[in-house]
Image (cartoon, rainbow, N blue to C red; front, top):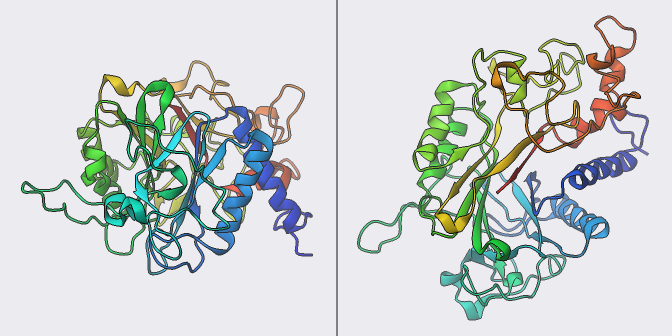
Length: 421
């Protein structure tokens, strides 16, 4: 049986351990919405249709495990194919139906068809999902006072195509690209939050991997009609991998200035001066590979980044490329957002081992322990906090081993983000 790279385990066993790592992280602070970007799509039937193959199987397996460990109230918005021409991707959005009702905003028309607006499909022509997606969403009507009120959630879908604000006269707004044709667009899902009497607009996005396309694609979000115009009881949340390092000032300005001008709050911001390590480590979200010239446990950049949290591509620092932005339409939408935390399972979060926090860097708020091997003090043995230093025999291979950095990085090269809205 094939072995997992960097481990003596079989690939099947390693896959199970990655799933358990996700579930363990989930358990530490159970969210109401959980987003997974970069879900593979398979061939499918074109943009806006359901993903297939391994991505489908993985998304459904994670849903099953969430239900096993956290209850049958967990649901999945069926992921759709986003983009084209070998740039396709899906985004999986899981949610707790005890607290939220999925309301679309678009509808599902069945078979190999793509998601489309409810108005275009027509309510009588909406269809429930067929197997294997038929148990992902509840056959329960969306509550009144919300988007698509009275329509069962299992006949609705996320939105994958976007237009700008309609001009005067009622003509449709211009069709938007992110930033060009066939690049993957964002994925909009909407939820009714009954406890707070509000609608949550969740826009999840994975930008192209290189600038200027990444910055321009992110900036295009600021032109989306649904993102510009919010009702008094609506909150918009924009999440994702924007592929723009937060300390890359020119591209950051292009990517985010228009969204901030609309009133959006960006929750990971450029490092306070001096914008060097170790301060930059407090905003890092992206991890190095484990191969040659890859991640190390050395105190290269100080706590919490050490030698693993800096990834460079073509000379550009890409260590902090994930973010969350929020905007509240009015007093009825609640807010402000709180407890923004980078979920670091290497050192653990929040970042409170060095006090006072250097240069006023943001430490985060919610608690996550390290998933590496710990000593009696709860410190990761394979990091300098526990005495590992350059030159120690076996220190590098121990740090990169499967039970330490290997499993964490194999699960994802990005650290998760969590926030209370």
